[in-house]
Every structure is written in C-alpha cells, then in structure tokens.
Image (cartoon, rainbow, N blue to C red):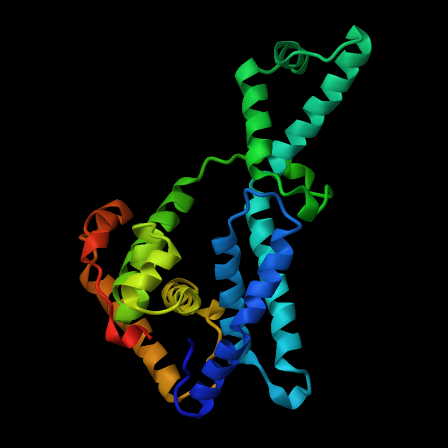
Length: 296
C-alpha cells in the first residue's frame, strides 16, 4: 500500500503518484495487447512509472486539466518512446529484410517455388549466415505494430555502427558516472536498483524481501531512475536537468545535495573508479538482502 507523507507540496506530489499508480498498470496492459509477446512488461511499467513521477512533479492544476488525463498522455507517450527506442536499432535490420523479401519474391516467381536461404544469399550477394541472422534479428526485435515509418534518412544505409574513439570515451565516462550515481542513491532506492538491474531479481522477490508491495517497488524504481538520470545529466549535460517544481524546497535541496555528492565522488575517484563489471561483482548476494524499515 502506498502511504504518502503529510500534506505539503512534496506530499501532494506523492499523493498524485500513489493515487494514479494503477493508471500505469492499465495503460501497460492495454499496450501489451497490441505488441509482440517478446516485449518486456516490466520495462514498459518502468517507463510508465517514470512518466507518472515526472507528470506529478510538473503538473499545474491551474490549467484546468485533470491530472489523470494529463498523466495518461505523458504515460502513453513514454511507452511509445520506449518501444520506439528499442525498435530504432532494428531499422537497418528491417530495411535489409525488405530487400531480402523482394529478392525471395523474385526468385519464387522465377523458380516457381520458395527460394532457399542459400539461393537468396547468392542472389543478394550475402553470406547464408547473414540471411539467417537477419531473419533471427527481425523475429527478436521487430515491433511492427508501432513502427515509426519507412521515411528514414537515406544516410542511415551507410552509417557505421562502430563507435568512434570519442563515442567510446563518452560511453566510458557515462558508465563511470552511472556507477557513482548509483552509489550515492538513498539506501532504499539503491537497494532496488542494485537488486533489480544488477542482481536481476524479480520485483516480486524484492518486494517480499523488503516487506512492501510490487507496486511500491515499481514506484521506488521509477523514482530512482529519475534521480539517476538527473544526477548524471547534472554533471554531463546540465541543460537537460529539469528544474524542480518547487525550487528551494526540501526536496529540491535533497536533490541538489545528491548532485553534489555524485560530483564529489567522481572527483575523488578519478583514475580508480570501478568498471560496471567490478561494481556488479562487489554487490551483495541476494541472500543477504534484508528488509529496510524506510522502504515502505
């Protein structure tokens, strides 16, 4: 059960989140009915809860729009963005798949039978393994019902997927900040992040260990993701950090203190920061997780 703190601005935000958590579940269920079975429900729930938290912080009741309607729009948009972000990586795969389908159709017409993978590969100038791999990629990654369209830039056909040295360095820096940002999270948020994303424990198992509901774990996870994103952006892309709805308030001061702690940890850890693999290796094993009194 979600129990908000005493009523104030921060409490009002938590009340909105608590009162509308079920809305996320409803929209996720609705979305799951229209996408392939391989789409992960927990990932969609996480994106939806993150959007709900953001909507609660940015909601302005003076505009006369009910919060449920405002939040629904934000949640649906977040789910679509999440699905499209997963789908984006497979656009080049689908483009090749369309070319291979055209080749198969031409061969079938000429041969008066379905073409084999070897025949398709020979006609397309590809290795058989590439044709098979393309079919596997499409099966795993396609989200055809939510495809953004085929009007992509032609330059994508020639873009290399190999990261440049600059991109590699940026990726390493972002990973370092991620490790540091996780380490500076409040204890209950850090526990959920470590156990869900690193130890890969189911939400139900984490909820049981902490003595709270799965819904509460989902809410904590969403809050942690917001804080992690802003904590990393505060160091790498300050212009992307959304201003707090109540600047100077207690929650805003806590958030600023968190940003400062991430920056301080990064400064003192230069040259000795652990890689993500090392971070995962030093996590507590699942059997040592105990309920945290403040988690509820």
